[in-house]
Image 1 (cartoon, rainbow, N blue to C red):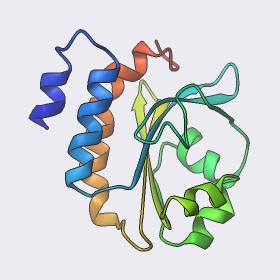
Image 2: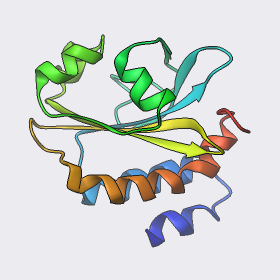
Image 3: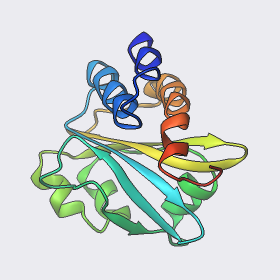
Image 4: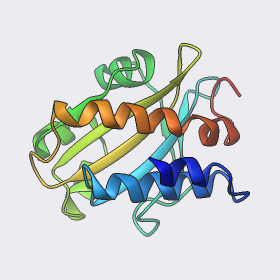
Length: 158
């Protein structure tokens, strides 16, 4: 966590904070794909503001915010989502084939919340069955450390 706190002082924001978060999460719980999405409720979109795989998931990519069960849970409800299999991913994500092509068959989406609203999500993908509920307390704390960076990219509440 000290790595993230140190990154907060770096003038290269929000990139320094997102890079530090990626490094900390690479250690535990681990990931093959890591992205950060900022939530823009007025536009009903989420925007990719960080990625470790810009070839497959470039910064600036946007996804619509819909009324799907996943959106109700994560974006509107502020609760994390764990998908343990390729089928779980396919049930909720239109880009499931691209996710699978990167060797990812499980997903953990952790919302970052501020003032009762979701600012964005930390999104980790790995091999099948990789993530469990035991990962959630640490991820929740790390997501909160992303709040200043998400506010900088213009997420809700800025």
